[in-house]
Image (cartoon, rainbow, N blue to C red):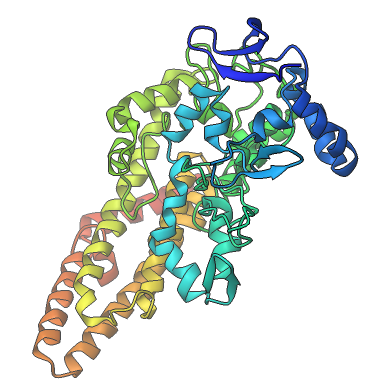
Length: 481
């Protein structure tokens, strides 16, 4: 009996060849292949949970079994012989693309798939050096690697999966479902980061908690912000009306009670198809100290989004918003969003970057070797991001108390005093170059504090502004007296 083979067709997509004639076009087989049937016979007993999850999936109903996803070529780096078949443990985006070509193409062109590139960033210096050591020794890391990076950063951003000589995967790099995982076949990404194996449930991927594994915490608390927002409140109150199992799940047609993360960033509207590039509806990249437009960020990474301007992406998102809100409402929201970013940039981020650059000659040259390194890092990386993410998702508490309040508090009560301390110590060294750097830094501090944004701190608020503040206080008091 000829074994069932899966081939990518040019005109009909995926086609199953039984003998010489096609049995069926599309993403389905007419029956379970002999190879998968053999897998099932064993794993039904040895891995009943996996069998149960697969049995509840669309793959099961399409006769797509273990072998169709896990099959490998003998020459594949991570291939190994298993009961007469060559298979691989990891199912990479390259494997998924056999059937899901469009989805993988979009995903691979997104920032999600590139998340593993953070492994060379300042963030990873913290996990590998500052927090960690080289105590985690494995065959592929004979000199050791930091357990903090392995079990922290890499689990969201993705490890570089390394294959040992016997074909097994190095335990420092596997298990791992980080969304930017670098796979042995050279592909970037992990579909199972969102589509948990082996059920690959669409309903689960549409649920906001699915994104909360990574999008949470002090520097990017999107799940907490969502839960605080009216969107999150509406979702929890109306989850039974969300129709999460709908095959097409179009907002305004299949549900209207609330949006989830997927609704806004990925899922179909009446005018847009599903996208697996989560950046196609984002008009700001709020990751850096100063926010940049997404096409600028995409260009730096060589992504196809470099050719898609932010105005197009904002229009894409507004197309989602207007399923529930009118255009005036949407326009006013974006005005509020942009103005908060402008405030953060002009008052804190840009002056902060300039001050830190001038302070560099007065600091120890080792990253995070100075107290002020931590102050500035948390000011933009944690608090600055929280404020920006908070306003982008209509979470007022994260915009203010966890955001702009913390930024202002630490700018005035930590960053400035620590800069002044550097000036004093620099001058005390007697080094002419350090004294010159101290003078330049002091002049910049005075320039910043004399600006309209900061002159209140020196008690130099103009009489007109003082009068306006007093009038507003009196108006408030009279209103609620």
